[in-house]
Image (cartoon, rainbow, N blue to C red; front, side):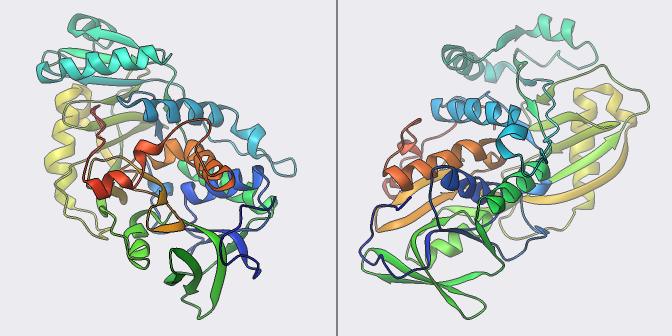
Length: 396
């Protein structure tokens, strides 16, 4: 397929160059090829993904959002993940994302009742299978969890979690098999002519021509955008994940998120736990804080589920959110000042779960010039220019 011409078309190179080879970049590459685009490349400096966000993600996939766009993206993406093996099979190999459909449970205290109820109605109205639980229902269904401080809960039994690295490698291998070229290099400069990105300058010293450029560089997206004079309110924000085991096994449980942003979900013989704080200083920091688990996460876990009082910490690690400081929602779409430069970043912890929907949206935008199956224009960069947040009011 030949894409709509840009003013400097006809010099070879690539039809689409994607900066960043994480889950978003690889999903975009796959959907572009599926849409018939011929020459697609992904520029990724580290194919081991040692510092990437995708492999260390929690892996949760939920429809429990407030904004219709986020709910719709989750609906498509989860269905895509359920059929991942068929979509991304390569030469008889079918990648297994290890989907665990154990549900998502959001619980909240008295101050969260209105938000949970309003979000529940929106979710139900969009066809999400959800159930609203009062305190008595929470206590009855989950007797091993403290509930005296809770007012309401919302359970989505068809949500769950998966293995992030399997998603990443599945998209990458399929895109390669479809003809996408993965280039191990780093974009260090962008050359423009008027409102058109003309060439990309790489750390290796070479220059690359591309008709369309996607900035899917995650935590590095703001520095890429600056090369074309665009300011993005996106910064790296450190978050921790901890794997723990208990002395006694609990009954099967969904992924639980409580008012303090504590997350607990089963993982193998134990549990993956974490507590995100927006007060974390921004920056590229991968160091483990030895006091965070001891002083904050462990007490929160034990306060919510008493059995966690006697847990054993087996492993912990740090990763980064590409945090959108404006409103915690992704920034997606074409930039008004540069006609062939597209942004897909600021996912604030939701990139993995929405990667299929974002990849499809980018392919539609580039090939057809507009969003087709799902209008995501309210997620665009214009709201940044206008300083008008489009905030997700659910517990995020």
